[in-house]
Length: 197
Image (cartoon, rainbow, N blue to C red; front, side):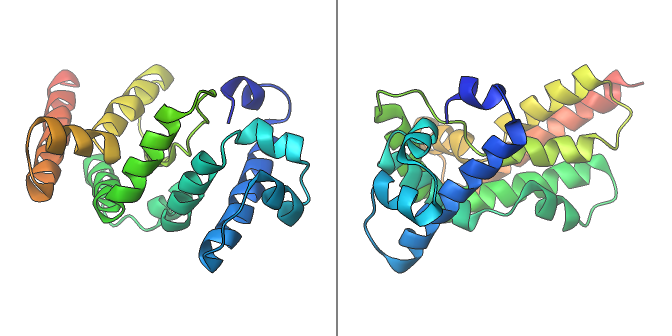
C-alpha cells in the first residue's frame, strides 16, 4: 500500500480497508480460486479504484494475503508470551517470527520477489514484528526514542530477511541461522545491561 496514502487522512479507516481487501483475497486463496483485482472489489464491496490504490498488483496482494493467513496479530503474540522479563519476551517474539519464516520460507521469498519485481510503489507490509516489539517495549523505562530504536534493531534480527542472508550469503542451514540470530539478540541484551549500569 502506498505509504503516502496511508499517512494521510483517516489512518484507522484505511487500515480497516486494507484488512478487508486482504480478507477478500484470502477467501479466494482458501478456495484455491484464481482472482483479479476486480474480483476483490466485487467480493469486498470496495471500488476497484480503491483496491488498486492499496494493491496495484494482484500478485503482491495474493502473496501478502497468503502470508497474512498464517501470521498471528502482534496483540495475540504478546498475549501468549510466557517470559516475565523483556529479554525473554523479545526472544520469544524472535523465535515466533523465525519459526514462521522457516515454515513459510518459499511463500515469503515469493512475496519479496514479487514486490521487488513490480514497477509500482512497494506496499506497506504488515510490520507485525515491529508492532509486537513496540507492545513489549511500552512496559519499559526506555525513552520513546530508545524504544523506537530498539524495536527497529530487534526487528532486524528476526524474520525472513536475516534468514535469507544467513542461508544464501553465509551458507548456514536453518538451525545455524536461528542460533546465530538468537545469539545476536542475546549480545544486544548484554550490551543493554552494560550500558544501563
